[in-house]
Image (tube, rainbow, N blue to C red; front, side, top):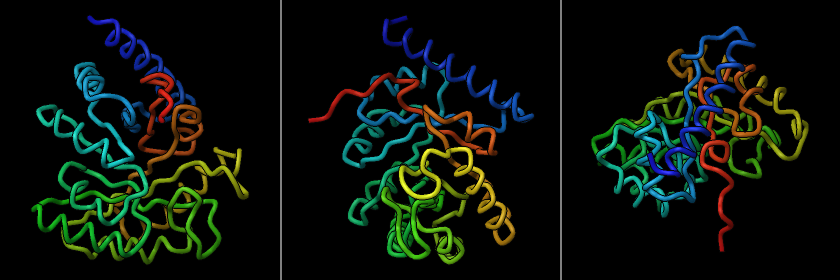
Length: 239
């Protein structure tokens, strides 16, 4: 085993212990929580090593990084999640490799995703990104739709050819009433998920929590956690 593979295996084991402990503390089964490893800024070789170590879900937030990486790893049994703010001019590329887009936050993006999913003959999973730092009509600092906009956007996704409404995603906000209150933020997301599932029972995916706050997300009821640094290490500075 290479030094890097050994390092990744040790990091994955620690994250696995954290998720298992959080599940036990919350009275949940470990199988209820899926680990998504966020591989942004790291090379395709790391993705390959992660696959060898049993990782099945990976995430990226920039298409210019993700597209070549996904192509280089196309032989691996991986599901790619796109988690960054997505410009409509990148949609065609993203639809070619992503299984799920977690950052759906506006009607124009839904329309573009539907068009390209139909073109590609694919069914694309979509999560509505919820901005808990947004006002009633505004978008969040890091993208996302205000809670008041979920119902309309979810209906649009559900009615769009080629798209499947899978659930909700959020990033713990840095500003507003939930700043520094991850447990409360994730609890609010779970309440919004309950509301969503009344109209869309199959949209039961809740993506929340990262390296620093995955325990709070699991305690609140998240089904998926997005972990980068705790698995891959501190990212190199860009630029």
